[in-house]
Length: 447
Image (cartoon, rainbow, N blue to C red; front, top):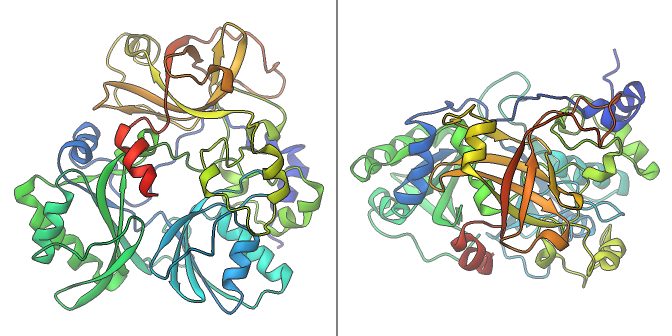
């Protein structure tokens, strides 16, 4: 029996939106990890006030790319600067279509002169491997799917543990009996723990300093226990799946943007190559913002705040489109701070709404009507309300601008996109993205 492709799914449904629109879809949370350990509020507070341990081992999709053409392949299909990319360094890899719309981003680590590891949501990996095979690049691939999609079950090839928060450095020094070698932001350094070798990637989340420790799965239990034991006197808290999904709302990273691949006739073969039951065919769309045109959900690197990552000194797919759009992005990324009284009224029926997480695209309105859409919304307990990563008309992007968020689930086809469905409104105030000041200044300068 032939496995259906993404194109088969679109043809059967009638359009990309008819395939993907799923009102009320449950938000994604990481696989395998407990939903909560100490409670999502305490877990969020840990990376703001103390030390937090996050397990990234199970939900990341890894693809190793190696061969004489590895750098040329990645440069041909990514906006990044490969002239300045050291072995041991990592970058946020940004592939785009010929129309300049993002496919999705991923974390790309250079492991050797002609060897890379691309990690994250697998849409970028699919894009790179397809074009490698189609273009005849001299490269090889090895993949390790996330634990939810690993054929035959089994363990990941790598463990990934993040240590984050103001006490992260102190905890790391307790584990390794002293400070690690001074390491540049988003560069890694080799480390060893009782004869077990792995690496430490220097970075942070939600504005907090920290490390991501990456190594062979066979060492995972030992390393995990070492951090837990050393962290006990510091009040180390493990972060569960619920809280794990929220720091991106503060740090300004928009996870899993809609890949800009569904409409270009020249990408029909690509869509026929992709499995229907992959990320591109199964990641749902929902919320109060509904458009029958999937292109209204596409995002450019400029809208995502990735303009500084674009290196025009080399040729790459989408270069001309990005040059043309450079000075006129249609929307700007901002953070909306939702009015806490309205959140309690609309979401909590007058009470504390508890944990709120949604990737729904909610309408953002001003006096002129529709001005933007939310992309991820979550409770941030240390802030005291709900924040929403949002793309908005530049005319309404000034911090302090008052807007409203329409809270509800549009049913989709059969109802006009602009229909008044009686959904409640939540007042909100525009603030910068990243919302966290440290992430917006020092962290961004380092990146």
